[in-house]
Amino acid sequence: MLRHREHEVYVLTDLIAPDSPDVSVAQLAIANSAILLTHDNDFKSQQTQAGKAEREAFTKVHLVLICNLSRSTLQRFAQVIDLLEWEVAGALERGERPYLHILKDKVVIYR
Image 1 (cartoon, rainbow, N blue to C red):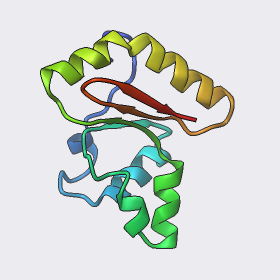
Image 2 (cartoon, helix red, strand yellow):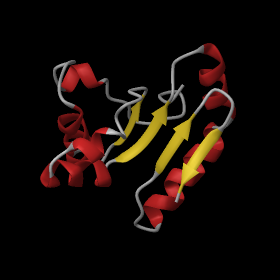
Image 3 (cartoon, rainbow, N blue to C red):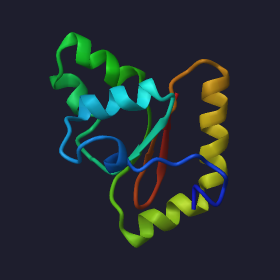
Image 4 (cartoon, one colour):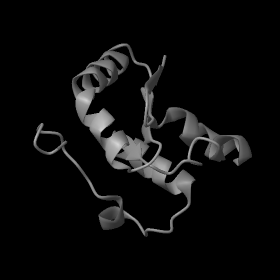
């Protein structure tokens, strides 16, 4: 769906080992000015467990967190993709870090 909407999409395992630590994934996304789309539910919680240098990567990464890959959650993502794109574009324009959480029954946008 994202490629169809003309987004540049990278598959993580093409760039880094699949079992890489979350902080390495965050640093890779930052280095490539990419928005990280993940369904790793503990990704955000890793920030509190990380050291100071690692914590910085978690606070700078542009993040879209999908709670799971169930059909209903993916349908929700498809239903609100226009809103998500608008929110991310606005955050980037303002120099802010977009962070969105897509759940089965709702979408949470953190500003």
